[in-house]
Image (spheres, helix red, strand yellow):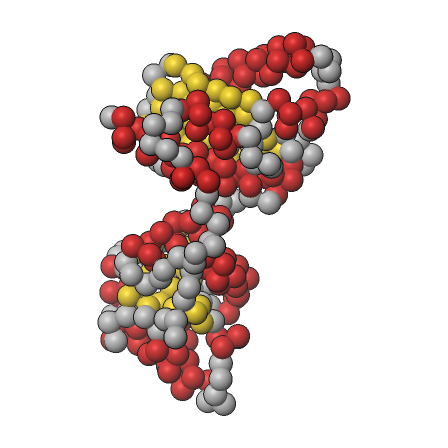
Length: 301
Protein backbone atom coordinates (compact mmCIF):
# COMPACT_ATOMS: atom_id res chain seq x y z
CA UNK A 1 0.00 0.00 0.00
CA UNK A 2 1.46 3.41 -0.95
CA UNK A 3 2.47 5.93 1.68
CA UNK A 4 0.35 9.02 2.29
CA UNK A 5 1.24 12.72 2.43
CA UNK A 6 -1.09 15.03 4.34
CA UNK A 7 -2.03 18.48 3.01
CA UNK A 8 -2.69 21.17 5.63
CA UNK A 9 -4.24 24.36 4.30
CA UNK A 10 -6.52 27.24 5.26
CA UNK A 11 -9.96 26.93 3.70
CA UNK A 12 -9.53 30.30 1.97
CA UNK A 13 -6.63 28.82 -0.02
CA UNK A 14 -8.50 25.81 -1.37
CA UNK A 15 -7.70 26.58 -5.03
CA UNK A 16 -3.93 26.74 -4.51
CA UNK A 17 -3.98 23.59 -2.37
CA UNK A 18 -6.03 21.70 -4.95
CA UNK A 19 -3.65 22.68 -7.77
CA UNK A 20 -0.74 21.29 -5.77
CA UNK A 21 -2.61 18.04 -5.02
CA UNK A 22 -3.51 17.52 -8.68
CA UNK A 23 0.06 18.21 -9.82
CA UNK A 24 1.60 15.89 -7.20
CA UNK A 25 -0.76 13.05 -8.08
CA UNK A 26 0.64 13.10 -11.61
CA UNK A 27 4.24 12.95 -10.44
CA UNK A 28 4.57 10.81 -7.31
CA UNK A 29 3.46 7.35 -6.20
CA UNK A 30 2.19 8.42 -2.78
CA UNK A 31 -1.44 9.10 -1.85
CA UNK A 32 -1.95 12.85 -1.35
CA UNK A 33 -4.60 13.40 1.33
CA UNK A 34 -6.70 16.55 1.33
CA UNK A 35 -9.72 16.71 3.60
CA UNK A 36 -12.49 17.58 1.14
CA UNK A 37 -11.68 14.42 -0.85
CA UNK A 38 -10.56 11.98 1.81
CA UNK A 39 -12.68 12.30 4.96
CA UNK A 40 -14.05 8.83 5.67
CA UNK A 41 -15.55 9.18 9.17
CA UNK A 42 -18.50 11.08 10.62
CA UNK A 43 -16.27 12.69 13.27
CA UNK A 44 -14.26 15.24 11.25
CA UNK A 45 -11.54 15.91 13.83
CA UNK A 46 -11.04 12.21 14.51
CA UNK A 47 -10.72 11.55 10.76
CA UNK A 48 -8.23 14.39 10.29
CA UNK A 49 -5.98 13.20 13.12
CA UNK A 50 -6.19 9.58 11.95
CA UNK A 51 -5.06 10.52 8.45
CA UNK A 52 -2.32 12.76 9.78
CA UNK A 53 -1.07 9.93 12.00
CA UNK A 54 -1.11 7.59 9.01
CA UNK A 55 0.89 9.99 6.83
CA UNK A 56 4.66 9.91 6.37
CA UNK A 57 4.76 13.69 6.28
CA UNK A 58 2.83 16.90 5.81
CA UNK A 59 2.81 19.68 3.23
CA UNK A 60 1.78 22.97 4.81
CA UNK A 61 0.17 25.35 2.32
CA UNK A 62 1.44 28.82 3.23
CA UNK A 63 -0.61 31.77 1.96
CA UNK A 64 -1.74 35.10 3.34
CA UNK A 65 -4.56 33.23 5.08
CA UNK A 66 -2.54 30.45 6.73
CA UNK A 67 -1.78 32.19 10.03
CA UNK A 68 -4.55 34.77 10.20
CA UNK A 69 -6.40 32.82 12.94
CA UNK A 70 -3.46 30.85 14.28
CA UNK A 71 -3.65 32.39 17.77
CA UNK A 72 -7.08 30.86 18.27
CA UNK A 73 -6.81 27.60 20.21
CA UNK A 74 -9.29 25.86 17.92
CA UNK A 75 -7.69 26.93 14.63
CA UNK A 76 -7.49 23.86 12.37
CA UNK A 77 -4.15 24.76 10.77
CA UNK A 78 -2.58 25.33 14.18
CA UNK A 79 -3.95 21.99 15.44
CA UNK A 80 -2.58 20.12 12.40
CA UNK A 81 0.85 21.74 12.66
CA UNK A 82 1.02 21.06 16.40
CA UNK A 83 0.01 17.43 15.95
CA UNK A 84 2.55 16.92 13.16
CA UNK A 85 5.34 18.45 15.24
CA UNK A 86 4.43 16.43 18.33
CA UNK A 87 4.50 13.23 16.29
CA UNK A 88 7.77 14.18 14.57
CA UNK A 89 6.31 14.22 11.09
CA UNK A 90 8.45 15.76 8.38
CA UNK A 91 6.89 19.04 7.26
CA UNK A 92 7.47 20.90 4.00
CA UNK A 93 6.08 24.35 3.30
CA UNK A 94 4.56 25.15 -0.12
CA UNK A 95 4.57 28.95 -0.14
CA UNK A 96 2.28 30.87 -2.48
CA UNK A 97 3.80 34.01 -4.03
CA UNK A 98 7.09 33.37 -2.23
CA UNK A 99 5.64 33.91 1.27
CA UNK A 100 7.97 32.24 3.77
CA UNK A 101 7.42 31.34 7.43
CA UNK A 102 10.13 33.22 9.29
CA UNK A 103 11.36 33.04 12.91
CA UNK A 104 10.44 36.73 13.25
CA UNK A 105 6.74 35.85 12.95
CA UNK A 106 4.94 35.86 16.29
CA UNK A 107 3.63 32.32 16.21
CA UNK A 108 2.22 30.45 19.23
CA UNK A 109 4.88 28.54 21.15
CA UNK A 110 3.33 25.17 20.34
CA UNK A 111 3.94 25.60 16.58
CA UNK A 112 6.93 27.98 16.41
CA UNK A 113 9.22 25.11 15.35
CA UNK A 114 7.45 25.16 11.97
CA UNK A 115 9.93 27.90 11.03
CA UNK A 116 12.66 25.22 10.93
CA UNK A 117 10.96 23.21 8.20
CA UNK A 118 12.07 23.41 4.59
CA UNK A 119 10.12 25.68 2.26
CA UNK A 120 9.44 25.76 -1.48
CA UNK A 121 8.40 29.17 -2.87
CA UNK A 122 5.80 29.27 -5.63
CA UNK A 123 6.38 32.56 -7.42
CA UNK A 124 3.60 34.23 -9.38
CA UNK A 125 3.37 32.80 -12.91
CA UNK A 126 5.86 30.00 -12.16
CA UNK A 127 3.63 27.30 -10.67
CA UNK A 128 5.19 24.48 -12.70
CA UNK A 129 8.68 25.45 -11.55
CA UNK A 130 7.44 25.38 -7.96
CA UNK A 131 6.02 21.89 -8.42
CA UNK A 132 9.34 20.72 -9.85
CA UNK A 133 11.13 22.05 -6.77
CA UNK A 134 8.55 20.57 -4.40
CA UNK A 135 8.75 17.12 -6.01
CA UNK A 136 12.55 17.22 -5.99
CA UNK A 137 12.53 18.06 -2.27
CA UNK A 138 9.97 15.38 -1.39
CA UNK A 139 12.08 12.77 -3.19
CA UNK A 140 15.35 13.96 -1.61
CA UNK A 141 14.02 13.76 1.96
CA UNK A 142 12.38 10.40 1.41
CA UNK A 143 8.72 11.41 1.51
CA UNK A 144 7.99 10.50 -2.11
CA UNK A 145 9.08 8.41 -5.07
CA UNK A 146 8.58 9.35 -8.70
CA UNK A 147 6.10 7.61 -10.94
CA UNK A 148 7.73 5.73 -13.79
CA UNK A 149 5.73 7.78 -16.30
CA UNK A 150 6.09 11.12 -14.55
CA UNK A 151 7.11 12.85 -17.74
CA UNK A 152 10.89 12.89 -17.34
CA UNK A 153 12.19 15.41 -19.79
CA UNK A 154 14.07 14.18 -22.84
CA UNK A 155 16.80 16.74 -22.15
CA UNK A 156 17.87 14.82 -19.05
CA UNK A 157 18.67 11.84 -21.27
CA UNK A 158 21.21 13.75 -23.36
CA UNK A 159 24.63 12.11 -23.53
CA UNK A 160 27.24 13.78 -21.37
CA UNK A 161 29.30 14.65 -24.47
CA UNK A 162 26.67 17.03 -25.87
CA UNK A 163 27.61 20.70 -26.26
CA UNK A 164 25.55 23.82 -25.53
CA UNK A 165 24.38 24.26 -29.12
CA UNK A 166 23.07 20.68 -29.24
CA UNK A 167 21.26 21.19 -25.93
CA UNK A 168 19.57 24.32 -27.29
CA UNK A 169 18.60 22.55 -30.50
CA UNK A 170 17.18 19.52 -28.69
CA UNK A 171 14.81 21.64 -26.62
CA UNK A 172 13.87 24.36 -29.11
CA UNK A 173 13.00 21.75 -31.74
CA UNK A 174 10.30 20.26 -29.50
CA UNK A 175 6.69 20.84 -30.47
CA UNK A 176 5.34 23.89 -28.67
CA UNK A 177 7.54 25.60 -26.11
CA UNK A 178 10.08 28.23 -27.11
CA UNK A 179 11.01 29.17 -30.67
CA UNK A 180 14.40 30.74 -29.95
CA UNK A 181 16.99 30.31 -27.21
CA UNK A 182 20.31 32.00 -26.54
CA UNK A 183 23.01 31.34 -23.97
CA UNK A 184 25.49 34.06 -23.03
CA UNK A 185 28.68 33.58 -21.08
CA UNK A 186 31.21 36.38 -20.69
CA UNK A 187 29.97 38.14 -23.83
CA UNK A 188 30.01 35.04 -26.05
CA UNK A 189 26.62 34.01 -27.42
CA UNK A 190 25.40 30.61 -28.58
CA UNK A 191 21.88 30.75 -30.00
CA UNK A 192 19.44 28.66 -31.98
CA UNK A 193 16.12 29.42 -33.68
CA UNK A 194 13.60 26.93 -35.02
CA UNK A 195 12.61 28.52 -38.33
CA UNK A 196 9.65 26.21 -38.88
CA UNK A 197 8.04 26.96 -35.51
CA UNK A 198 8.60 30.68 -35.85
CA UNK A 199 7.24 30.69 -39.36
CA UNK A 200 4.04 29.02 -38.13
CA UNK A 201 3.50 31.90 -35.76
CA UNK A 202 3.30 35.64 -36.23
CA UNK A 203 6.41 36.00 -38.40
CA UNK A 204 4.76 34.28 -41.35
CA UNK A 205 2.68 37.42 -41.85
CA UNK A 206 5.66 39.75 -41.74
CA UNK A 207 8.49 38.39 -43.87
CA UNK A 208 9.33 37.02 -47.27
CA UNK A 209 8.70 33.27 -47.51
CA UNK A 210 12.03 32.54 -49.20
CA UNK A 211 14.43 30.56 -47.02
CA UNK A 212 17.25 33.10 -47.33
CA UNK A 213 14.94 35.95 -46.34
CA UNK A 214 13.65 33.99 -43.34
CA UNK A 215 17.14 33.26 -42.08
CA UNK A 216 18.09 36.92 -42.44
CA UNK A 217 15.01 37.95 -40.48
CA UNK A 218 15.76 35.45 -37.72
CA UNK A 219 19.32 36.69 -37.46
CA UNK A 220 18.04 40.24 -37.12
CA UNK A 221 15.73 39.09 -34.36
CA UNK A 222 18.63 37.34 -32.62
CA UNK A 223 20.74 40.52 -32.76
CA UNK A 224 17.87 42.59 -31.35
CA UNK A 225 17.26 39.98 -28.67
CA UNK A 226 20.96 39.96 -27.80
CA UNK A 227 20.92 43.71 -27.24
CA UNK A 228 17.70 43.52 -25.25
CA UNK A 229 18.98 40.78 -22.97
CA UNK A 230 22.28 42.54 -22.30
CA UNK A 231 20.26 45.53 -21.14
CA UNK A 232 17.89 43.31 -19.19
CA UNK A 233 20.76 41.49 -17.51
CA UNK A 234 22.00 44.81 -16.20
CA UNK A 235 18.52 45.77 -14.99
CA UNK A 236 18.05 42.39 -13.31
CA UNK A 237 21.55 42.02 -11.90
CA UNK A 238 20.18 41.83 -8.36
CA UNK A 239 17.84 38.96 -9.22
CA UNK A 240 18.77 35.81 -7.35
CA UNK A 241 20.70 33.24 -9.33
CA UNK A 242 18.59 30.35 -10.52
CA UNK A 243 15.36 32.35 -10.56
CA UNK A 244 13.34 32.13 -13.77
CA UNK A 245 12.02 35.51 -14.91
CA UNK A 246 8.97 35.51 -17.19
CA UNK A 247 7.37 38.35 -19.18
CA UNK A 248 4.30 38.30 -21.41
CA UNK A 249 4.80 40.29 -24.58
CA UNK A 250 1.15 40.70 -25.50
CA UNK A 251 -2.08 38.79 -25.12
CA UNK A 252 -1.55 37.33 -28.62
CA UNK A 253 2.21 37.48 -29.12
CA UNK A 254 3.83 35.09 -26.62
CA UNK A 255 6.63 36.23 -24.35
CA UNK A 256 10.20 35.83 -23.21
CA UNK A 257 11.83 34.00 -20.32
CA UNK A 258 15.15 34.69 -18.67
CA UNK A 259 17.31 32.57 -16.37
CA UNK A 260 20.46 33.92 -14.71
CA UNK A 261 23.15 31.39 -13.77
CA UNK A 262 25.56 34.03 -12.48
CA UNK A 263 26.89 37.43 -13.50
CA UNK A 264 27.56 37.45 -17.27
CA UNK A 265 26.14 33.95 -17.65
CA UNK A 266 22.46 33.70 -18.50
CA UNK A 267 19.84 32.08 -20.71
CA UNK A 268 17.15 33.74 -22.81
CA UNK A 269 14.14 32.14 -24.50
CA UNK A 270 11.43 33.51 -26.78
CA UNK A 271 8.09 32.18 -27.91
CA UNK A 272 5.95 33.87 -30.54
CA UNK A 273 2.94 31.72 -29.67
CA UNK A 274 0.79 32.83 -26.72
CA UNK A 275 -0.46 29.28 -26.19
CA UNK A 276 2.98 28.11 -25.08
CA UNK A 277 2.96 30.77 -22.35
CA UNK A 278 -0.54 29.79 -21.28
CA UNK A 279 0.10 26.04 -21.10
CA UNK A 280 3.53 26.44 -19.41
CA UNK A 281 5.39 24.57 -22.18
CA UNK A 282 7.69 27.58 -22.74
CA UNK A 283 8.45 27.61 -19.01
CA UNK A 284 9.05 23.84 -19.13
CA UNK A 285 11.58 24.28 -21.93
CA UNK A 286 13.45 26.96 -20.02
CA UNK A 287 13.61 24.87 -16.86
CA UNK A 288 14.94 21.90 -18.84
CA UNK A 289 17.47 24.06 -20.65
CA UNK A 290 18.70 25.57 -17.40
CA UNK A 291 19.09 22.15 -15.77
CA UNK A 292 20.88 20.67 -18.77
CA UNK A 293 23.23 23.63 -19.16
CA UNK A 294 23.99 23.67 -15.45
CA UNK A 295 24.83 19.97 -15.63
CA UNK A 296 27.02 20.62 -18.68
CA UNK A 297 28.89 23.40 -16.84
CA UNK A 298 29.51 21.13 -13.86
CA UNK A 299 30.81 18.33 -16.11
CA UNK A 300 33.08 20.60 -18.13
CA UNK A 301 34.24 22.83 -15.31
